[in-house]
Image (cartoon, rainbow, N blue to C red):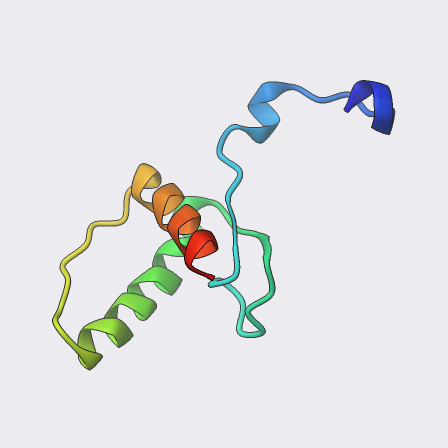
Length: 76
């Protein structure tokens, strides 16, 4: 990035960056908010899923959210 984009960066700035399309209504692929801000959205999506079929009991912690974002990208 320093060579081609002429910008300074540090690894800590990119450690917990999550991308996905399940935070916005338009389903645009964007950089998602911090994990704690995603919890209401994920809880709502889980309740929708649970009302349609076999219920799942999930606890959304940081690693879980990162894995869900990866799985959602692959399945899309």
